[in-house]
Length: 281
Image (cartoon, rainbow, N blue to C red):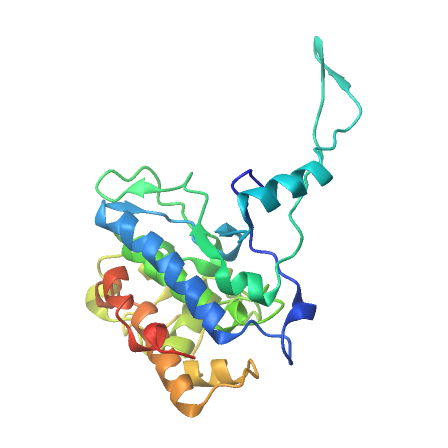
């Protein structure tokens, strides 16, 4: 935590209305705030490259006086001093603010943090970006990339695990091996299943590692059965009380983010105008 009250996104599930999900207006508030940060960076030619739930922070909606009083009641705690090389050092205990309630989250300002992996798009320093489960296809396949990698990873965190009280799951998981498939084989296959489109030849030809995973007909080498699982089905599987219209709008929003060819993804500025993100829940 900091004296400004910026803390990791931690909240009290017991304060949620049944069945224990974040209310949709709060979800949309959080997603919009994060997207504003992405859009600001992209306008300056910067890609975050490490967007994930752990990097979303929230400002405590406390007054300066309330924050000062809380810090007085909860002073820093230190471990016993220990010798390190030629001197004694003191380590401090990690302390967090109390879990946020629904009412506090409804007033919170959400922040996209940890810019240590950010890169200027026109001066890239590494292609080793994003955790594997959130990694865009162009990175897995060794293609050129730009700020649209952030739109892919943003789309992954929009998915229903951001709506649940427990949000450790991921849309794309390297599980369920077939024909000695690698983790990357499985992820690319799942991208086809969920996104509802096949990789196109013109895109694969631009990727240096596409031959490792795809046949000449642009189909995955390790898989031959494709059963579509649309985003609507994924959303309904969360058991969140969405109306049919809300499901369709949310699925359309996900589709704009999770296009296999990066040039087909919406920009952050375009997503900020999306009717689902701007509709009242």
